[in-house]
Length: 117
Length: 112
Image 1 (cartoon, rainbow over the protein chains, first blue to last red):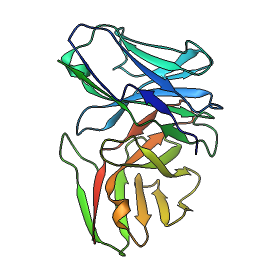
Image 2: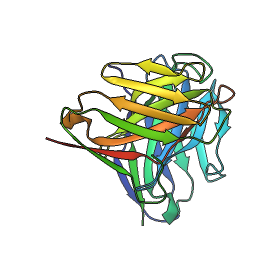
Image 3: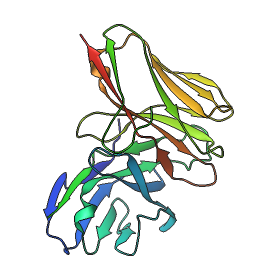
């Protein structure tokens, strides 16, 4: 079964440093997402991306965050200057269609665990 | 099935029994509902979904029930197996957007 792959699986970074988390969505998918999950808490939406632009973002996704699709396969999340509270598991996800289409399924990657120290 | 902070509701069942996991949602505009399973250290894994124009949908060993009147969603797992042990999240979305809003999760523990 095709899957969303993420790298790195775990990254430790110092506060204030920039971090780039990478994702390879499923190849025929058109919608890409980043979610995060702070330890023991709910999965929270960060951003959705379609047709090379952000289609929706949450309040969490402030100016410190950016996303990019630098080529035909990768989708990245950049945190410009990390804070302690950015420590979380970051999940990339992708779907073939948007929510409005019946039968749309959003597939998640295994996550990148970010620890800010 | 909702939780606050670090506390997760836990459902403990005997192997072979049926499990019912519940979720209360708050957005009456939600059109689309999904159940995800999350094992420790892994990403959410799609189980089954249902649109708001349906009240029941069945998959392999799983059934999702939707009651829009009381904004309630449930996941029924038949003949629960040890491999079903995980945290289960409900999620909801609107046709107008592409984001999912996740519930707090319920931990299912299956006793052999």
